[in-house]
Length: 301
Image (cartoon, rainbow, N blue to C red; front, side, top):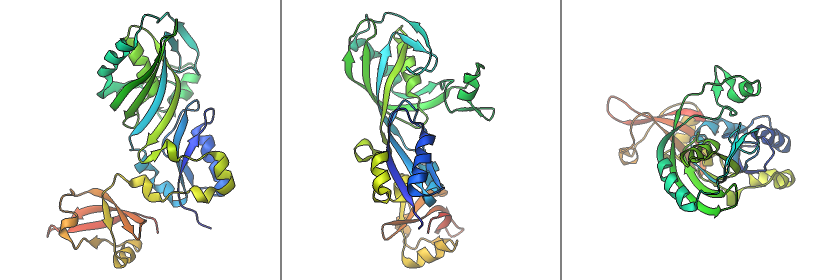
């Protein structure tokens, strides 16, 4: 039986994203299973996992914005920027107030640059940086631009000597919350680390609709979502049955209603749907007559 779709998994803390994929391969009895963006082992929350042909769309879901709830602990510095690593330094941060944090986090809204942590899956010369860091090797990672679209402090615990702050964050892909906490601490004049992390959303996948490993083990197929959830950011084009046949056979189609695509630029990828099902990902181009043509890029039927 061919199974295709995506599971909005609630990853528990202590499990790697790869371990979650292995478990789902056993549950669905499918080899083609893959996640849509690593969630650190110590973190929990939303981890969309693709099953069957839907794995071909994982790259699109990687582009989704992410939302997190994170707790930052002040006055602690570690080798991994979270509480899983070796403690490198401790200082009294009792003087830091909620008001100071509220003021400092304003500096982190919008497009900022981060240096990813050495203990991360970012690759350096073909190898994952954490593999090099574990060997004690220096990992010269470059700064990367990320977009912090929202960052709010929702709770503050003024405990001595290490106050804690709970933050709600909405950000672009590739943002390291560990690094964000460390950088906030640096601007406060105190070191800081990530104490715990929950991913509350990834694109259309939210925490409220997640399912556990236990639920999946009893009736996995019940919780499969359509593959179209992975490409919700792409413009929509509804097909008729004749278009479906053409696309399924690898042939391009002409969009007969010029109003459907007039505001969509050439070389835009689109989700092609028929009867509420995702048929393919298509590429919109224009010919010499300026007609809108859609070429099949990834066919799923």
